[in-house]
Figure 1 (cartoon, rainbow, N blue to C red):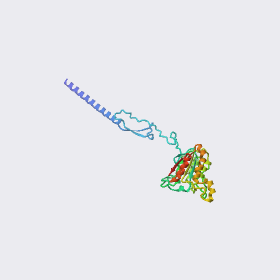
Figure 2: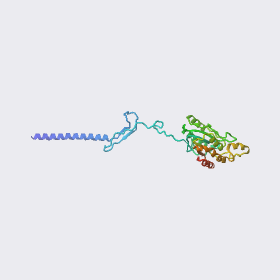
Figure 3: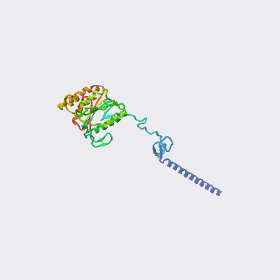
Figure 4: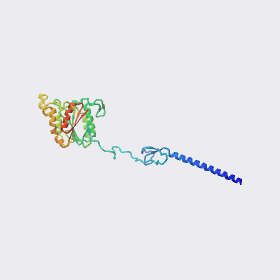
Amino acid sequence: MKHYHVAAKSLVIVVIGVCALFLAARMADVAGAESADNAPQLFRTADHDKADAPSGRLLLRMPSKDGSEDNSPSVENSNPPAEPSEPGADDDTETPTFFGAAIEGKVVFVIDVSNSMKKQDAGAGEDHDGRVIGSMSRIDLVKSEVVRMLRNFDENIWFDFVWLAGWFAQPPVTDVWKGELVQCTEGIREAAIETIENISLWPGTPTWKALKRACEEYPNDLGSLVFLTDGEPYPGTADWTPYQTGYATCEWGEGKHMDAVLRDFPGWFAEKKEHGCKLSIVGVGQIPGTIQFLQQLAVQNGGSCKNAK
C-alpha cells in the first residue's frame, strides 16, 4: 500500500512536469507569432503578382501595437497618371498674350523696327533663343516676346505684321510681312519666327502711315490691333524741310506728325472699334515723353497702354 502511494505521487509529478513543458512551448510560439505580426512589412501597391514589374510604389506598413488594424495593403490604381499629351490629361490651352494683352482671333501687329530699337535699356533677360543677356536692346526684348507669343498660337489665330520704319531718305516708308491676314499653321508659325529673328532695322518712325495701313488694309472684324513703338513719330512735322513738304504730307499727314496721328487715327479705327476690336499699345524702353503720347492715343480710342522695359 505504501508503494502504491509513492508511485501515484511520482505519476502526478511527471504529469505536472509535462504540462509545464507544453505550456512553455505554447507561450514561446505565441510570442514568436506576435513578434512576426508586429514586424514592418514591405508591400508593392499593385493589383497583380508580377514581382519584377515596377507596378507601383513600395510602402512600408507598420502594424498597430494592439493588432486591431488591418495590416493588408490597400490596392491602388496601378495605372500611372496620364501624361499631358495622353487622353485624360488636362487639355486646357493657355490664351496667347503679348506683353500681357490677350491675343485671340484676328490680329494685326504694328511693330517698330526703326534704328532706335537698338538701344540697350530694356534690362536683363533672355533673348528669343533662351540666351541670358545682361542688358537687352529694345529689339531683343520685342523679338523674345513675339517668338514666345507665336509659339503659343494655334490655328484659330489669323495675323500679319506692319513694320514701322522708313523716311524719304531710306524707304520703304513702312512695310508689311504678308499684306493680308494668314492663318497660323505650323508652316506659317515657323516662317513668322524666322522673319522676326532676322528682321532688319532702318531709320524713321512713320507712325501716321503705319497706323493708317493697319486700319485701311485689313478687315474690320479684327479682334485686336497691337501698336508697339519706342519713340514719337518722326520726322516731327510735314514741313520739316521745304523741298520735302509734299512728300511728307502724303506719308504722315498735315502739320505736326504727332498731332496728325491723334487727329486722324480715331476715324480710321472707328469701324473696327464698333466690331469689337481692342487697341493694345506698348511702349518699349525708357521713354517717358513717348509714353505720354501713347497713353493719350490709348485713352482717346478706348485702348490700353503699357510701358515694357
